[in-house]
Amino acid sequence: MKVKFSKGEKIFLSGFLVVYVIIAIWNLNKIEFPKGIGEVWQVKVPLPSILGTLNPITIIMTAVIFLLITYMAIDFKRHLTKIPSRKQAGIETVLSFVYELVEDVIPVKEFVRPTFYISATLFLFILFSNLLGGIPGISFGVSNHHLILNLFNDTWPSPTGDLNTNVTYAVMVLFISHIFAIKLKGFKTWMKGFVSPNPIMLPMNIIGELAKPVSHSLRLFGNIAGGGIMVLMLSYLTKYTIVPVVLWGFFGFFVGTVQAFVFSMLAIAYISVQLEQ
Amino acid sequence: MTDLTMAQAVAEAAKYIGAGVAMGIGAIGPGIGEGHIGQGAMEAMGRQPEMVGTITARMLLSQAVAESTGLYSLLIAFMILLF
Amino acid sequence: MTGIFVNFNGTSILQLMSFFLLMYLLIKYLYRPFLNLVDQRRNDIQDEYEKAEEARKDAKESKKKSEFQLQELDEKISKMYNEAKERVKKYEESGKARIQKEIESTMEKARREIVEERLRAEESLKAKVVTLVITLTSRLIQKDLDEKLKREFLMSQLSKLGEENEK
Image 1 (cartoon, each protein chain N blue to C red):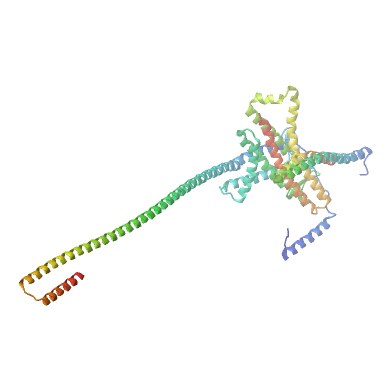
Image 2: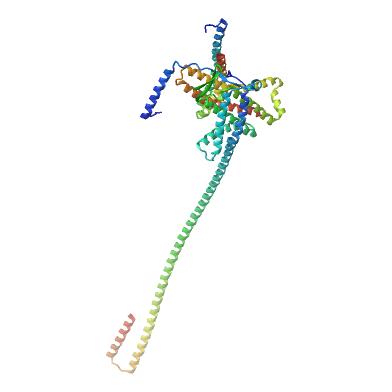
């Protein structure tokens, strides 16, 4: 591929590069190791035990993504036409992709739509929050019990980088799959599933069921949170020169999309396993 | 750094060693697993060149699943290092 | 207040609530319209497809029909052509025959006329000869003619007769 630049573009690009290098050299000794890495801001509310603490950043970002997705949905419904516009075609592509996935995997027809609702919502929410985790913006850190605002040295804090979100969703998927199973098979048949080969396998089955949400949630959390910390450390080591852009792109967009897909795919798979007779 | 007792110094050193070992050994499994997945995908692509798009998507999906154990060890390494 | 990044607390309840609220809103604004649209589109496409299939079938049938008609028309035309040819042939033949007949008839007529003419001529000659003979005899009887006169008179009468006969 051959790229042609006009004269003005060449001047702009070379000027940009010179300024970039000058700022990088000027910053060389000023960049410190980011404070409060691996720590999150928490707020106490008058509620018993672990319910009493909240992560305000996660809540704020969840609200932001909530509003974004809701706005997108309302916009979709308002401009709904039979011959789709470009935006509508994009949303339809994503949704029909998820729907076909669900239709292929779920064996019972009456559970296709609820599973589609759950998995598509999971996919959209996680995709949006992961993509937000690939865009540099305002991030919050805590040091010495003071809140500090970091501008553009890290990406927006994504809700999936908080274990609460992932564990909640994974456990929810587990519960939903078992509720669907009870609805489909009846309580007795469902209970028989736990002692299926023989009663000795009961603890193994229960552990297997409990291990599902753990791996399900920690996969996403490890990718987003671990990737975020790794990017922060590598950015510090390279003094925020060129490398963080590539890493933000990789961890935010590529890994984010793949992990959102994996999470919703596994949710569908867990539900379909419970629905098999 | 100067006013560390012997026990504290050993604990600090063990932390770094532990983090390194956790990350290093934890990366072996996913590495082998992803290699196997890549091998299978390449063989499938060689056998059926018209299915390249589908196979690549499935390969990335299964590699993302196989990678998760490596990410657990990354998390553990961070937790050892930072706290 | 700070905590480590691996934590589990009351945020999870808010996340759960927000998830269900989001799901409710998305079902209302995104999924239901989307699925309805897809169903509607599928139905429309099916209808159109069926219509197109029917139209194609119709077209095929009409094509077959028209081909059949064309063939029939062709056959008719060739039949008519042959008939016309035959008729022309017949007509020609009949015309020839008629002409021949006419010719023959005219010829016969002419022949008959000739014969009649001849008969008439013969009759008239006979009559003339008879009158001549009668006159001659009457002259011979009535008048006394010398031989010379007789001969002259006879000769003139005979030449007259020959002239009349020639006519």
